[in-house]
Image 1 (tube, rainbow, N blue to C red):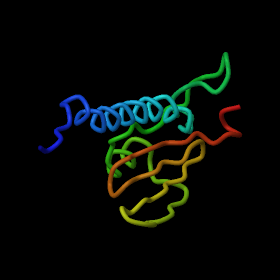
Image 2 (cartoon, rainbow, N blue to C red):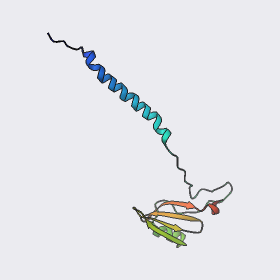
Image 3 (cartoon, helix red, strand yellow):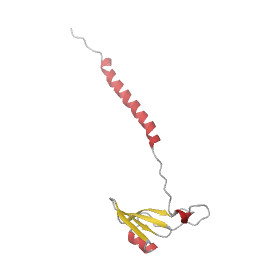
Image 4 (cartoon, rainbow, N blue to C red):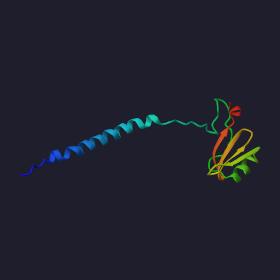
Length: 114
């Protein structure tokens, strides 16, 4: 007569694998946020110190034509560099970064904002 295993004995390896998966998932959920880096970038239109005036700068999404119409021609242009192409337009108080034809970021010159 052949020997049969009980259903409980058949389930033990599956339960162990499930328990190991749950423990590993929980461990990953707890440790993942600890590995994150925080990147802070200045907001162009925000005053750099209490009591100073905000500097009027181009908004994200503006086209190159809109920036030139509103702020005039830049003192200096750089780029394009990379893919997608990134260009820099340097004005007296700030630098505007374009991806293709749209503003992606504006940085106020530190000497001007302090």
